[in-house]
Each structure stands twice: as structure tokens, then as C-alpha cells.
Image 1 (cartoon, rainbow, N blue to C red):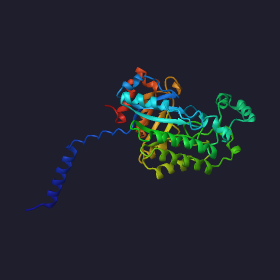
Image 2 (cartoon, rainbow, N blue to C red):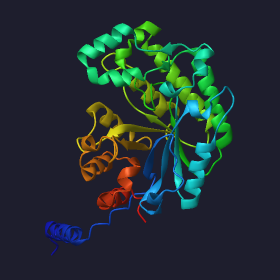
Image 3 (cartoon, rainbow, N blue to C red):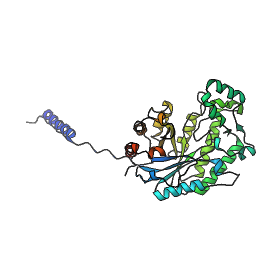
Image 4 (cartoon, helix red, strand yellow):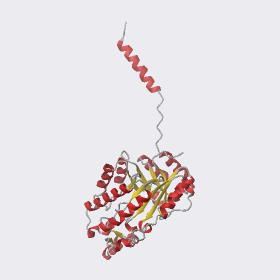
Length: 343
């Protein structure tokens, strides 16, 4: 005599027992798509780099200045990039290149007619009353208006020349895109009163799109990075449209990163952009500082690295001074393992 219900119940019990008893499939190791990059100081490329002996370090990140690399119109000095590439070659590493315009633009670009931004006397007085700590920064500010056509003409000509020389180089990991902000990021200080120079969101967005397109055309075989930030806090609405343009126009070809990683986290809006973008492109972080720069603001490195891994980044720019610190070796190794880039 058959008992269908009993047979079915027994079969289900056997199946459930097998599922419970079956060992979990091992987690798939994370594929290395970047790693840890040793971040060098402005216009600094050391002749020797002992931190590159570590297998946990994937490459170097150099920060160079346009005014050094094109001291005269059309006269290019590529020696620092060549030195960085040679250093990487000797250690079998990769290079992340960042040439910054903005405050580091050559004087001749103003002589050619580019509009220059400088703090007014009234602005200096106001800042001294309200935020005297900013005076030193304001004293250094001299930069082109990012949407100025003369400035863009010369800056983008430099980008094309750089691409003509390096677009096929196998040791380049990525090329950082600059030119729409005061430094390597997108930021424009609100204290500079940009309305005096005809500011509009549309104008700055258009300038960034032109810069992004030019980098992509100059480096068709390499990804480019955008260091995200809302340009004028509380005023501009530029960041979201520019990020959307990168992800939609150049999916997987433009990497996004934020340059303020610390143990206390990041600005929530920027962190959320990085987290969401991780499903569509490579994302990364740059540390807020290192042992020789804003050490106390960065805080516990292990905690900062954990935040980076939780946010799904593929690479982290770590200050060279941290990579040279033996007390941070374990934290650095754990980061490399988490990125899937440890041997």
C-alpha cells in the first residue's frame, strides 16, 4: 500500500538534511583591479623607493604641476613622468599620473589672455575677520577661470600632447583628470566669489565635459580618474551631472574616487556616490593624509582601510610615509589582501 504523503515528507527531510550538511562553497577570491599606490608629494619622484619592494604595493601615484611640465608654450618637460615610469619598470609596478592645472598653471597662460582668479582686498579682510586660518591658503590662490576659453585651449593642448607621448605605455594604470578645479579635485573655494567671473553651473559642467572628453580622446587605451567633490559647497549643483556624464558616456572607462579617506569616514554624500558607482566602474580612495601630513586627522589606518573595503573600492592611494612606517605594515597588508592584490 502506498503512502504518498509519507514518501513526500521523507524525501523532503532527506533533501533538507543534505542541504544542511553540505559544506558552504568557498568564497571566491576578489580579483585585483588596482591595489595600493604609493602617493608622492607634489612634483616629487624619488630616485629610489624602498616601499616598492613590498609585494603589497601595486604602484606609485605621482602629482605633478602643469607649470613645471610646460614652462613655455609648447615646450614640454616630461622628465618627471619618465622618471616615474622608469622607477615603476625597475620594480615591476604601475603608475597613476596626475598633472594638476588650476593653481599650478604656468604664468604664460595669463599672458596669453586667460582670465585669472585672485582674492580681492575686501575678501581678504572678510576672511581675516571670520576665518584667519584661511589667509595662508588665500595668499597662494592664483588660478585660471575653469570655463575660460583661452585657458581651456592651452590646457587641453597639453593634455593632448601628454596623450600623444604616453597613450600606449603599458605601465600606466590610469591618468587623473584635472583642470576644472583649483587643485587635483573639483573644488573651487566659495570665498573667491565666483559670480564675479560669470559663474554658472551650466558653464562649469560644460567645461568639465570638455576636459573629460579630451582626456578620453588623448588616452583611448587607459582609464582616467575623476576626483569627486561638489565644486562650491552650498552653491553649485555640478557634481551629480558630471558623475552621471562619466558613467553614462564612458562606462567602465572613467574611474571615480574621493580624496579624503580617514578613520572617521567621509562626507556621506560623496561616500554614497562611490558606493553606488562601484557597481558600474572602478572606484577608489586617496588618504586624507599620512605620517608627514595631517596624521592626526587621518586617525587609525586600519579603521580607514576597513571603510574603503566596505565601500567596494579597487584601489587606495596611501601616502608614502605610511607605507614606509613599519608599525603600519600589518594594516597595509590586510588592505592589500582585501583588495585582492596581495601575493
